Image (cartoon, rainbow, N blue to C red; front, side):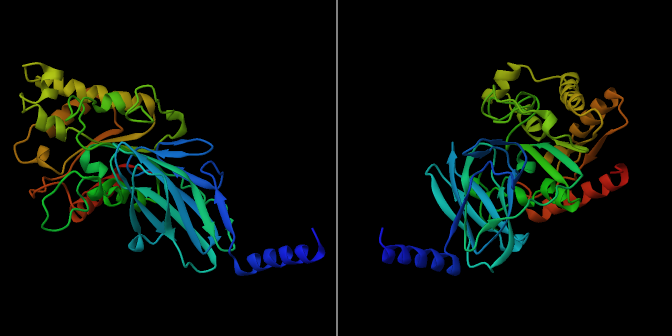
Length: 362
C-alpha cells in the first residue's frame, strides 16, 4: 500500500469518527442488557415467550435498531425510549427475520430503550441483537429494584383486547393485546418493582379452551414445550398475584366443549373438586415461594357477577390452606362487553394497590 492510499484510509476513518456514522452491534447476551420475565437467553438470541417480558438497554447514540423474528404467530412489542411510554413505538414481529428501526434522530447523549412484549404467550419472539448508531457506546444497566412481584393469569392478565379500537367488535388477534396497560403491569410499575407475568388468554386451572391448563405450564420457560422447565431460583417474588378461574367458570358450564369432555367426561366437576383444584395450585405456588405474600384474585369479568359461587370457592380453598399470608381480592364485575379496556384495567390496578398497601410491608 503506497503513502497516498494510507492517507486516504486514515482520512476516511477520521471522517467516520467525526460524523458519528459508526454502528455498534450488541449481542443479546451482552451483560449490559437487562431482561425481565422468563426469557431464554443464548449467545446469539434471546427468546421472549410470556407477555410482559422485556429487555432494557442503556446507551449513547442517535439511533437504535433490533433484529427480530417471531415463531408460531406474529408478536407485538413496544419500544419505549427514555421511559416515555406516551411515545412508545408499537410494532409487529413476524416469521421473517428482519431489522426494525426502534428510534432514530435521538439527541447525541445518554438514552435508554425498553423492548416490551405486549402479546400473548402463543408467540415466541426472538431477539438477535441491537444496532446502535452515532457515536455509539453502551452504558451500565440501571440498578434493579429490590421489590419483586409475579402474576399468574388468563386473558385479563395477558392483556387480551386492551387495544381494541372503540366501536370495533373484539377479536383475539395479537395486534390488540397490550400487556403494558394491564392491571398487572400497572401495579408493578406503581411499586417500581421487578415483574414476572405468566399468563395466557383462555387458560384455566381445571380446564382451558385448549389442551393445556395452568398447573401444567406454570413451571415452564417455553409454554409450548413440556421439557422446557423454568428455574424458580432465578426469581423469588415478594408478592404473587393469581387471577384465574374465569375460564373454568365458562367451560364447566359448557359440557359440549371438547376440553370439558377431555377433562371431565360427561359429568360436571363437583364443588369439592373445584375447591381442591384451586387449593392444590396455590399450594404448589407456596411450595416454590415459602415466604411470599400470595393474593388470590378473581375478576373483573362475569366470574364475579352477582350470585356467582366462584369467589366463594376461592375463599374456601384459602381457608383450607390455613396460611396467614394468603389472601383474596375480588374485582367487581365490569358489566360491559368484551375484555377489560385500559380504564377497567386501571380500576383493577388501583384496587389491588390499595390492598397491597394494607397487607404487605415490603
